[in-house]
Length: 472
Image (cartoon, rainbow, N blue to C red; front, side, top):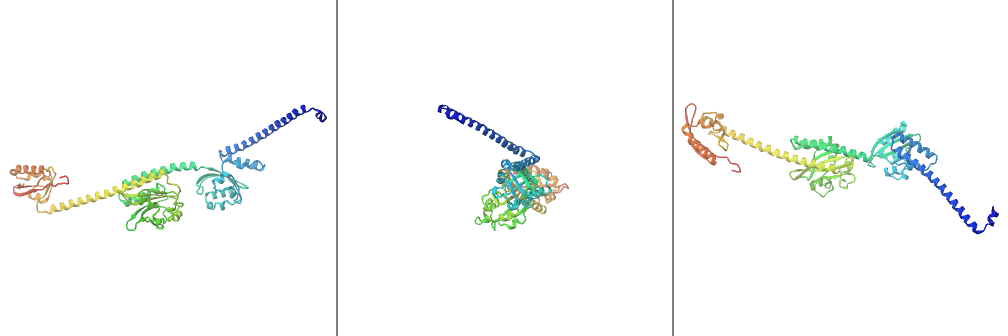
């Protein structure tokens, strides 16, 4: 063959070489396509395992876990990184042996900062908590478990699928924060509407300002489920806000804090001082991070007060105090919450106005009744006959001395009955004068006789004085 090729002319050799090169390129392309196709099938198979299994129940996750371990043992591609959901592996010494990117993102750490580290040293706040106990229980019993927990450090709700083995624990996470927040928002809204409803009903039954303050704090804790609630009133002499009523986890907090209103000290710059000075509500949704709360943040942290809302209390248009709510979660007071609680504060102020008006009404009524009692006492002991009529001239009252003069009972004198005691010869003249005085509303003087039932006659001088109000 070599001799033949050597003897081929150049015109034949050139096209033949080109043909061979093209043939080799074509065959190489086919081989590469087959390899790539098989790799793509293998990748799709792994992704399908991850996606399908993580959407299934715990048994599906366990099956996937076994397959992933088998794949890893056979030096397959880095299968763990293909898992869609967050995944970690912890060995029997409680050290992280594997953390994928999704899990590291949730844990707010870098993967390199976790691998080989002890879980309880990285997150010491978890020791003796729910997740700590769940991990230890799974490790000791060698039983799979699923637990849903809130992680304050991450501000997330996670569903934990925990699978024990001789090597340690394998844990899948599923972030259910959005679902939990939606459910919590509905529960919180229902709880708040019940609070407002009970509060409004209570206002109708309260008979005193002190009772109103006590009841609103009780309802805030029992129905509103706040961590703590208190009412404070402004002390004009000291320019401080003095707590008068509280309910909930106070635990000495109000004794530890000092709230002044001078506007120049740190103790006057918090939400309470703002609400009093500005006459409108104020909130803080992170009491540990807000610099305005620095004088009280340490005391608040001890009682797990995370968020606070302050609503001013008014009498008339004057701010007289504050109604304060605490929650044990950050970012608790959202727009619907603040709107309804501010409405509660306005209703409380309205109730105080009603109580004040009712107090003055009762005071005025008592004054009137006392005045009437004095008047009745004076008329009873008076040595002159006294009678009282309506503006139309109908008698409504006669005193005992008038009865002794006329000789008739007080009940018989009411209306126009008193005229029967007047001597028949004087009635016409007296009636004309009486009607004229009643119509013209002026003083009248009359001299006439009473004819008693026993036939005796008593001469009297009658004087009538009209009573006039502001309108005359």
